[in-house]
Amino acid sequence: MHRGKIERLVIAVTGASGVIYAKRLLEVLTEKNIETHLIVSKTAEKIIRHELDMGREDFEKLGRYCYREEEVDAPLASGSFKTDGMIIIPCSLKTLAGIACGYTGNLILRAADVALKEKKTLILVPRETPLNVIHLRNMLELARIGVVILPAMPAFYYKPRRLEELVDFIVGKVLDILGIEHDLFKRWGAEPRE
Ligand SMILES: Cc1cc2nc3c(=O)[nH]c(=O)nc-3n(C[C@H](O)[C@H](O)[C@H](O)COP(=O)(O)O)c2cc1C
Image (cartoon, rainbow, N blue to C red):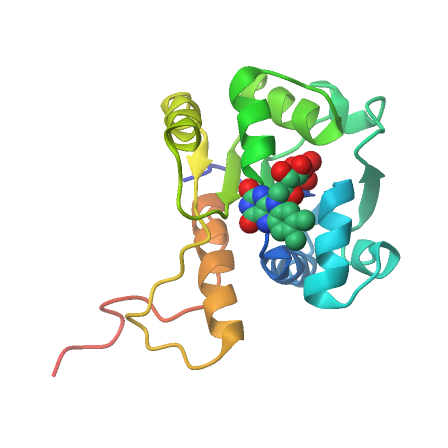
């Protein structure tokens, strides 16, 4: 778990299905008055339109500061810009592969590389199935150096009835890693057993 108070986070949204997770995370972080620096990839923009019926401009209103992936000269591209960590949600397997290889071809990849070199919390929320050996190898490589691999893989033990509850489970798991208090899902064992 992240240590210390979270005040400023980099949130990147890449071209994987599940952009609804990013929308909800941004809403919750804003409610908690956390400063968000949002980067939406070009492919994520297409998926946001398809899955959320939202344009880039409306989606970007969810972040405090917004950047394009081409803006490799943005403050986030430097380790001198202080943040409390970065979350890529959802994280495409392409972006995950780029991070695993140290390939910093756009602002998302560069900001992730900066998070790694500055020893910040880096959480990736990949969404793909099934996974091939290359995907698994890249995830293992990153997990070994401290990256949190948090697949978009909701649980069912709390008996969710609505889509929003499945989304909140994953967002709550991200907040748990960051040490941010929440009541987005009911914890196993929270109620006394009969
Ligand atoms: C509609 C759509 C859905 C996609 N879903 C996924 C996905 O769930 N997971 C994934 O790893 N890639 C997915 N892709 C492929 C990525 O978008 C593609 O690899 C892209 O180059 C990722 O770029 P980015 O990481 O810079 O956003 C999807 C692409 C499209 C068009």
